[in-house]
Length: 293
Image (cartoon, rainbow, N blue to C red):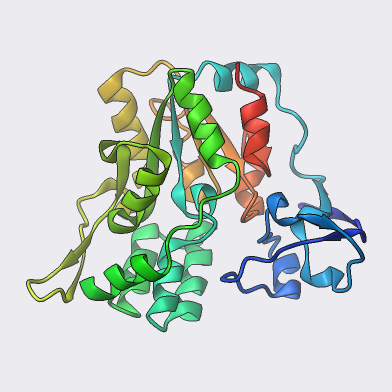
């Protein structure tokens, strides 16, 4: 049976659940969607609600995916990378930015359903992006208010990983289907130059009213991340480039002239169809840090 998962729950673990992530136990299991990364399990004690606390208390294995250490060839590519491109939503950050913004504007559930379909590759990304924005049409003032009241939540271990990469002389990029207005604060926190951001751009009128998004950005459409990664590689003549993310659009970046290696980060969301095709699956960024020279 494809994707068969063996789950072993440690009843002595408790965790601190992220306040802004809704969790539906049965749906999470049926979609192989894992919401809570290892770092949230912080103490030892009796687990009174085991079904509500899933991923970090689980040992997850799959008959259709290799979750063991990568091959020597994969490690060599990782350790010699000239550049690493990171997805942002559910990778660098714990949340899906557009879902959070939609929730702030009162349309969270409807938009989240579209996001799941888009990230699993079920529909063209540009169709999903336009549909999601049409459900709530955020104004400039709403976006600014959102950024002030809900600052980005950075994934555990990502700051250490990016610091280590930069110390090794590896260039770091953020390649996202999210919005530049929401990603620039993340880049500032992590010390990534704004010119290393490849993302979409929300458009507003003179009065701050929502007009749409810039369709000329490569990341606004299916295959766009692959195009952005190819542009990065060609512009800088990188010999080795790695893509890290959780979605189908990230996997697309691994192609001739693009990324040599795709690492699936499953510490926030596990998308089985994506993970199955990955060169390496990690649940914690510490694993990547530990395998750097």
